[in-house]
Structures are given as C-alpha cells and as structure tokens.
Image 1 (tube, one colour):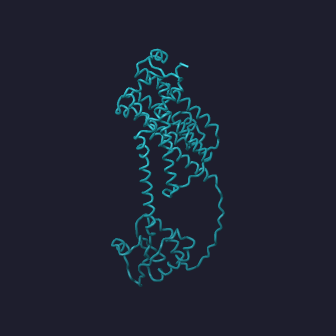
Image 2: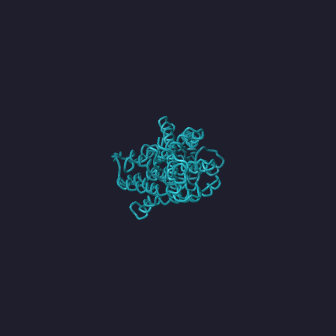
Image 3: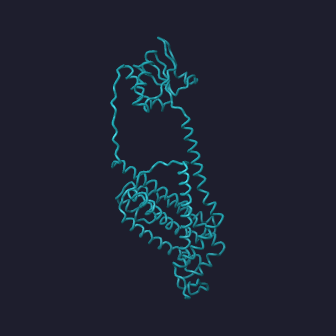
Length: 406
C-alpha cells in the first residue's frame, strides 16, 4: 500500500522518535536526578531534626518558694503525674526559702544561675510565673491547678476512663478526605508545572535545526503536535515512576516516614489511577498551549517571555480549583469542572471527597475533546504564522516529502 500515513499513525512515528531520542540521551539522566536532590536534602534534614528534638530535654519549671509550699507542690505533681503527665511541667525545686527570705527569679534567669525554662515564686495563694511569654502563658493553667490542689491538701481519686475507639466519624471523615483532596491537587499541580515546560524547549530546539520543517513537510502538522505531546507525556510518566520508586525504597528503608493520609472516597487504588489519568489530561492541555507558544518563538528568551503569562494564568487556575474544592456541589465547583484547564484539578479533588465515578468518565471525555481542539488550533497557528502556508489540503498537495506505509 502506497497511501499516506494517517494522522494517528504519523503521530505514533513522531512520538516514538522523540521518546526514544530523549529517553536514551545523557540529559534525561540528569533530568531524573534533579528533583531527587531536594528530596534527599529533605530526608537528611528531617532525620537530623528528629535527632535534635530527641536530644532536647523537656522544659523544667523551677520552684523558689517556702519549704512547705515547695514540698506540697512536689507531692501534688507526683500524685497527678499518672493522669496528666503530658499537661504538667517538670518541677525542680531550686530554692526553699526561709521565712522572710527574698528571691529575684528574673535576675536568676537573666544570669543563667539556674538551668530552668521558667521560675515559679510567690506562694500557693498568689503564685508568680517568671519566664518567656509564650512558655509561661502555656504553663499558667497547669500551674494554677497544681497550686490549687497543693493548697487544698485533699487527695482526689481520679477514676480510670475506659476507651472505646470507633473506626471513623462523619466529621473526621470529611476533614480527612478534604486533606487528602488538597494534597492530591497540590501534587498534581506541582508535577504538571514542573514537567510541562519540556515541550517548549524541545520544539524550540527542533525549530532551530530545521527538523520541524522536515516533519511538517512529511506528515500533517496535527500529527507532529500530537506525537510530540504524547512523547513528552511518556517521558514525564517515566520520570514520575522513577521518583515514586525512589521514594518507595526510601520509605521501605526507613529513610522517610510520611504521615498517613485518610482514605479517599473512591479508595487509594482508584484515586492513584485517576491521578495518573488527570495528570495526563492536565499535561496535554497545558502542553498543547506550550506547543503553540513554542511554535511561534524562535529563541529561548522569546519562549520565557511568552510562557510567563501562561504560567501565571495556570497558577490562578489552580487557586480557582482549590477554592472550588471547598464548596462541593456549588456553581463554583461546576464552573471549575467545566473550564478545561481547571477540570483535572477539580475532578481529582472530587474523587477524594465523593465516591461517584460517572462524573469522572464525562470529565475525561470533555478534557480529551479540548486536547484535540487545542492541538488542531496550535497546528493551524503554526502553519499560518510560521510555515506561511494555506489550508491543510493545499499543504499536502505541495509537499514533496511523504511517509509511506511499508
């Protein structure tokens, strides 16, 4: 068969060529290493921070009171410790004052004569806390309770409280799902913005060495744009898989210990699958715009100038989707779902909060339609502004190059 390749077949040829060329290049290796350095630094910083926290002693409250008051406070602290140990400060009697003896706690703290965070002076009837503002504010309630208990002298028997945990409650479930939705939406935005810029650099490079003109003469421009988009999407997915595998190894090895996020409404397996799909849609939508920008730019400086408004607009889109997430079922959320560039973010947040699956099928179809429209519009813009050619039919008739079926 000597017929010309279809748009999908030509897009596959272009995608395979770009994917293979980038995957086996040296620059791709450094591209994979780039985001791992901040992760490694964060892991090391977290490990060092946990060791520093573990090495720090619990703040101690010094007692500078009369002999009777100091002894009463010690007995009361020992009696209440089994019940309220986390709420009560550690006590250290630094001075038992004789009758009529004066003591200046502020001077002692300033001169570092005592190794305590704050000092309790005065009497049980009128206790005085001296120390840093935030610390003594937090200790004011426990110290007041200790002084009242020590002053009464009565031993109160605290009953043992039986604990009856439940799997979940409606309030905690909604709050947890919102946290999961927020985390998934932020991760999707960061990955999209970090990886979509590769489309620009790839197209500008091929424009500089005239490869894009050969491709445009050989296959429909729609196929060139579509192939490049899916090639860069494949490269991005390889990068994400590599980073996820590295994080998984660090987690198994004990290098990181992330907090457990609450289960999403659709479950973790389906949320991850939808996350991959919505990342692909967000990448293709933003990448198609970047392709149109790159097709009109001739230098890297022009790319940076033209892409900056798109980047800022995408940041506003993310804020819009984040705001819509706080109002499920409202007109704002529906608008965020219908706007193609915010739709992947809004729908991923909905997956974490609502169990219904049919809206995701409709949303993915809607986003795919917009990807096709943006690719077609970018290809026409490239033909009319850069190639200076007419409609697609005339371009094909004038072409002297064609890819043939084998």
